[in-house]
Length: 308
Image: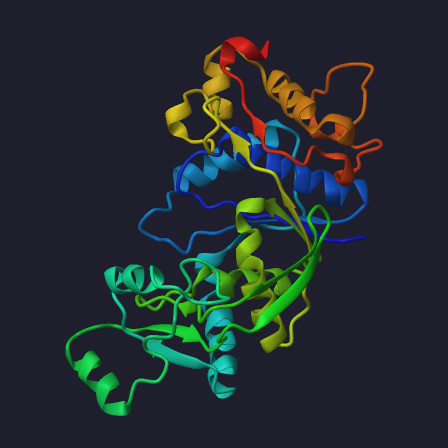
C-alpha cells in the first residue's frame, strides 16, 4: 500500500484538470487500501486566498474525495524547511544567487549542453567574497541555489517508465526567504509519509531535481505517476479563458456533481472500466481501477454543449 496525496495551491478555483488529477491520486491510494493526505501549498502568500482554499476543499468533497488527518499548510512549516536548508548548507551545497529575473532569462537563453532548456548556468556559483559583498551592499537580496552542476538523476514513473535527466543549480530558497517548491515538496512528502506522487506530467522534467534533494537530505524517494494534462477545446492547456472549466461553472450551467464525475470517468476510459450505472461519487470508480490503463494522451475537455 502506498500513501498518496493531493497538494493544490489556493490561488484560484480548481479547474476540471485539477479535479481529474485529484481523482486519479485518490483512486490510486484508495484502491490499494491506503491513506490519502491533503496539503495546501500556500507558500505564495501574496496569491493565496482563504476563500480559494475553502472552495477547493468543497469541490473535492462534492466529488466524494476525502482525506485522512488534518489538512497540512506549507505556510506553517517554515521550521522544517529551515532545518533542511541548514543540512544542505552544512554539506557545502548552497550558494547565494543575486541574479535578477531578467538576468536569469538572458542566461537561460544561452546553450547549456546537456542541461535542460532554461537551465541556470551557474552565474553566481563562483563569486568571490568581494563580489558577493558588493551585490549585498547594492541591496540585492539573494536566493539560495543548490550546487547540482548537471548531476543526473533517474527515477521510474508508472506511466512514463524509466526517466532520467540532468539537474541545473536550482533555487531552494527564494530571495524573499521563502522555501522554494523543489525543496518544500520533498520535505513535505517525506514528513507526511507519502509514498506515491500522482500529478500532472508538466512536472515530469522537474522531478530529477526533487530526487536529488531527497537523496542529499537522506529522505525516501516516492514512486511517481505523471498523468496527462487536460486541454481546452483549442488544444491548449486548460485555463480560465476556456470558459466553463470549474465545478462551479458547470453547476451554474445546470449540471450536477454526478454529471461532472461521469465526464471525468469517461476521460479515464478502461482505467475505471464499465459501470452498470453512472458514478455519483468517487468511490463508485474504485472497483477494478487500474492506473496503468488510463489514456496516455492529453484529454481535451469538450465545450459544454458537446459534453451531454
